Length: 227
Picture 1 (cartoon, one colour):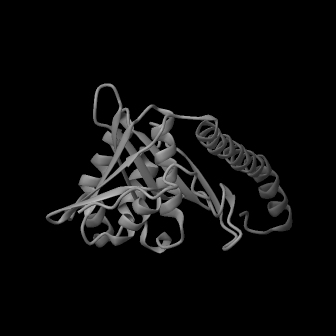
Picture 2: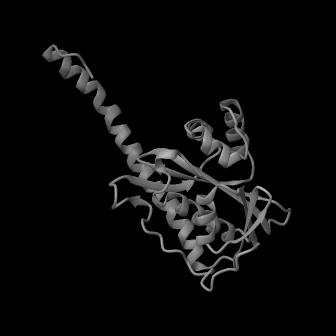
């Protein structure tokens, strides 16, 4: 059973909240690529997934040892890994893995920690995967999930996926045109904004470190316990 692509399948999906501050919650949300040296961040995120989210993401119950090894392998491969940071903490991850040597076929996957599901973040992560696939010449993007994973199916359908049901699994296939100015600028903007937020965090940390000796000195003069 398959659902046809909607007429506007290739139209850009409107992002209700761009990278930056969410108007709904006041949280700072940044989506960017994960670096190879951020395995610890990825591992910590996966470890916070509850048992049901782990099963829906990996198809089977998995333990922390498996997740730590998975994070290490994922960031050491040629996969594209997009992270969703909420107030500086990694809360969701989308992955794009190439299935063919010419990189025309790829597989996408994503997951969010339970408290951050149902807030539109999964849709934004998946949109970034579709954009990344287009910008790298991927012609077909596949997404496989369990039949009961209705949330992922809705997100895939929202982005113009053709869903096929086989046994207990669902295969979502998205066919997209090649990169254009809009898709390229979308990804460049995300990475540029992430760099700005990282610099702000770095500057804030640097200022706190510079001020720490002065705070200890003044606290000592006043007979207070230094913070």
